Image (tube, rainbow, N blue to C red; front, side, top):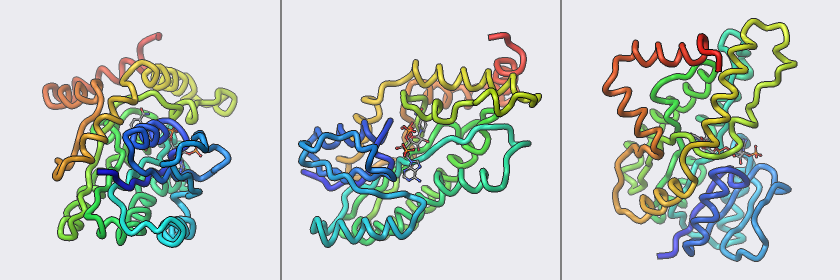
Length: 275
Ligand SMILES: NC(=O)c1ccc[n+]([C@@H]2O[C@H](COP(=O)([O-])OP(=O)(O)OC[C@H]3O[C@@H](n4cnc5c(N)ncnc54)[C@H](OP(=O)(O)O)[C@@H]3O)[C@@H](O)[C@H]2O)c1
């Protein structure tokens, strides 16, 4: 059956890939983005509607809800994909309160707010909410502590939301992703000049290279889009779905090996090894 879907942060990376795959499968997709000048979709794709929505701006979110109802005559939403997110790396010793707030505002608070605004439409269709999480919620990576913490918080929020919304027939699923190709780590790239005299510089350089090379080499975005299409069609899904070979491996490693062992490997890679 043709579904009505809304994706946040649809202009790039995984949001764009999911929008194209869902529209390609015949669904009607509202692709939201904070800057519509960055719209990557061709105007000839009839079942993709691009709308401006900054997920940190409640007035804009409310406007999109109104637009859906008044302009597009949408009476219900089948799937909401809370995809917009970013990584704000850096040593916690240097993290300002503003930076901490920004990371949580986008990756956690906005998910609650967007979901809250679209709930009346989701309830009408007994819809689903897919929250895009990360395996960083499972084990922290040095210098990506705020990101990992925000994704761990997202997982807990998703779980509570799932339990609270079950009574209304709305299902909340958390997707725990491994590394996928996108610009997320390039956008968060480390700028050597900003850290010129900082003793953390050498480690930041190393972790920045490590993260960027990982996102180039791991899973294909089709793996995620196939999974989303699959979950969407099922009546009931588990709360957490691990997506990606590396994420499956990390899950296995964290269950097999003591944390002390995994810590040692990670620390060696970043603080000791030459590459
Ligand atoms: N790629 C991975 O390896 C990976 C792994 C685990 C989890 N994830 C998660 O997957 C999701 C998508 O990330 P990605 O990898 O596809 O990176 P991406 O290409 O950087 O996509 C992030 C998207 O979020 C949007 N965004 C940022 N702030 C926003 C705001 N205030 N309002 C609306 N949209 C906003 C970005 O828009 P702009 O272009 O305007 O900044 C962009 O479209 C994120 O939640 C990320 O944490 C990714």
